[in-house]
Image 1: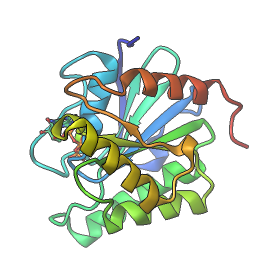
Image 2: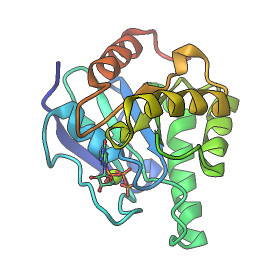
Image 3: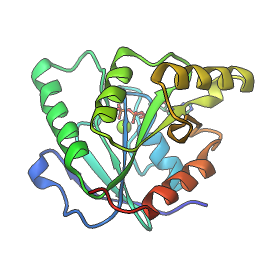
Image 4: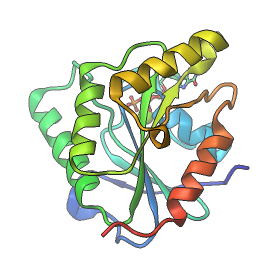
Length: 197
Ligand SMILES: Nc1nc2c(ncn2[C@@H]2O[C@H](COP(=O)(O)OP(=O)(O)OP(=O)(O)O)[C@@H](O)[C@H]2O)c(=O)[nH]1
Ligand SMILES: [Mg+2]
């Protein structure tokens, strides 16, 4: 399964958000964790979402239109080089969107499988849980570890972030395609569910 997709809108301010018309799946995670690569992998298109080796490049909310839903690429967090004022502006944009978006069906929280969740990862998780937002953790870059190490690392992520089985992690690699079908299933289930109140 895969779906052709296109970038339909990039947004820098909450007032510019598109109308709440289609189911949306948001992607959060620290800079460089692989958000744009995951979008490209799901779309089966190499250069749909811009990837880079320079972290912190995505400063906007990007809406990618798939068949039955939009994937929303959010600015990465935890990038030290960003100024305080800029970080505050990103925070307002990202948190404002996540907190109040009625068409938001699921948040994919990406964590690099090679490292234990960072303080920023834990804060993000706590904030989303506090706001009762539906989350699925995706452990990225699994191709960089052996199978055994990947499984152990995924268990550690689940323990550290206190995930329920429904919250993952899904072991994923944009390079090998591992976890893609599982993600499509989870997204389809979330898109099919009733809208949040
Ligand atoms: N080996 C491997 N590398 C990956 C994978 N996913 C992403 N990368 C690499 O990690 C780097 C960052 O990937 P991006 O997809 O741009 O990360 P991002 O989260 O969108 O980063 P920002 O937009 O800066 O927040 C790039 O060099 C990617 O090629 C993966 O599954 N496996
Ligand atoms: Mg990106």
